[in-house]
Image 1 (tube, rainbow, N blue to C red):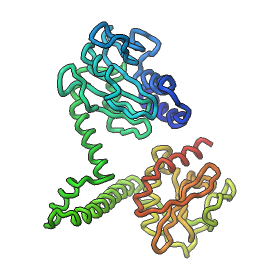
Image 2 (image 1 turned 90 degrees about the vertical axis):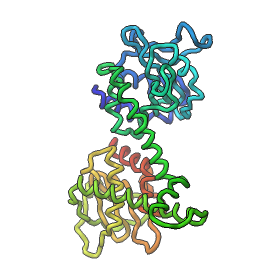
Image 3 (image 1 turned 180 degrees about the vertical axis):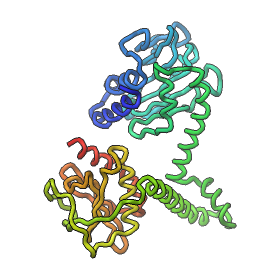
Image 4 (image 1 turned 30 degrees about the vertical axis):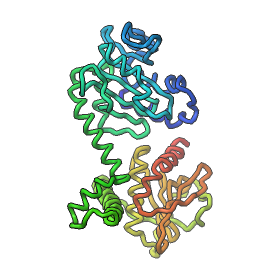
Length: 366
């Protein structure tokens, strides 16, 4: 199993089993030990490579242990402290990791709850673990830009100098990305004030800041929409053509036969730019689970349908955009029962990303 296959396999396992994990020990067995073995490539049953319940000879409280120590040439290289799946990863609850970092030769510390893996080193002060991670891996939302750095921690390629040399850039670029994501989700007063000052001469009064908070959020959404549409257009070659679907009453289970693969185009059905934009967003979300060409669309008078494999028994979503004022996103449960969600803006589809992915995974596994 390759590094990439091991990572994707573990992510799939987490998605399917996370609801069954209730303890820290279960978290270790289900996700953390497989991460050490399948992703990092170390033999968890070889004490020359992985030492569970590691205790240093000095400098710590009596009986205090770190969950795992990864060894190379009989020296500690990586320390791993584990928490239960779902727990918040706070360094206030990882005192062992801090202490052991200063009394061993380890330069890499990992704090994890089985889903999120925070990697630390000592960039700020020698032998004192930084308070901010230089690499963050979320198995349910894998950032592909961190994979080369993650791979450098594997048994096959581990080189401490290389890891430390790249850690500073990773740390600050990652921190900046998280701050930008936070500002896009909920702009701070400082962020709003900065951009208000760049585009207007208004004073920073409470009313003006409130107004521009709304405007900044709207501008961010439109900017991201443009970026997404540009990339999708480039990737898909603008070859998607609207097709049609026989009207089905909304909020009912989908009933057409398994072999229903489409209907003749209907001239009285008009596909709008908003529907196509919504389709591209759903398609982009779904592409984390299946290849893009498996996500198809059909338009009708009542709604715009998005399907897996052009199969009417595999509805991923419906776009109810034909109303004069309100727009709704229709999503389906295991019985293909539709629930509609009000959209203030088309980009609100992203807030339902996990439900969309779950539908795709459900159909793909059948």
